[in-house]
Length: 382
Image (cartoon, rainbow, N blue to C red; front, top):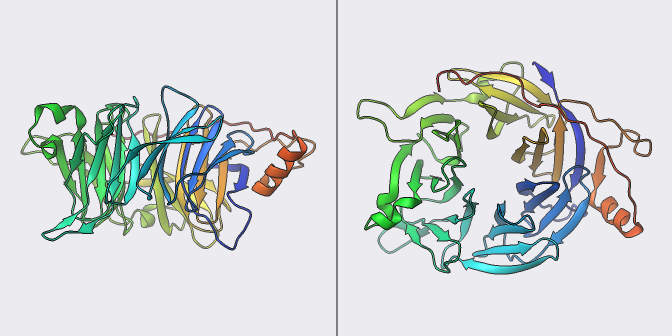
């Protein structure tokens, strides 16, 4: 291990343990952290102190994705299994149902970095002739979908836009396929499926995909059986392979840490990192991914008491944030937090404390000092 990470803040998404809410999605902008969970509620927290700001209630099903609007800091977009995409005024807690997904149940959602396009992947429905698992593409200002792609035969579990190429997105399905679509081609093709630029196949069902590289030229895939695959995200010459590298069991590749499951990957500073977890003690390990090896670089001890489902890296604040099935949200830094006189090293805060403090007008602040959370390393020859 090259480093140790310290827990800076922690809060619980709910008060009652009778009906636990799993933390599924997180997004941050400026000083606000938006969190979506399995109880249909979205909560906004102060990113520095983890104090509860407000709750956003309106969805009738699990929240499957969140995105802050790139043009309006007070606007948050959300998608839910209830079949709606909502636009929220976070200052006043008001929402508009902007898009509806007919007949199908959304499982994943993303918005392009320029805020122009929205994409929704859906659960598979068995039809008369074949199974359908469509991907809906919406455009801002147009009420109906501009395309419905029928390119998967099982649940579409992840859709993600390329941050460097706003019109390009990838979809991942339990059918083992990752499709990359160029939305800008819709106007020039007769069939929207012809806008698929490349199809990449894993040996088993995919759980997550994401673009990486300075221009988003690569794609990673995590499978449900804990395999990791790295691909080129653009079509290759006939004699060139799209596959860059494959790890049949990345958990076994992590030296010095007993990894039981994989959370997700993060690309930052020209390096690709994998977050792995241990079920026994709740610890996490941040690992650097090279072409042929995975190296543990930072330990996150006693992180959660159940599996972590999502991770967020805030580069400008040098902050790593984790959320999971124990309803907890934690932030991490490579520098130990400096406790205030009133807190005396108490970093764990519960929502009940936040709400009581707000009611009393409490203004206790927990100071945080962050440095770079990631160790150095270079993604060789990518």
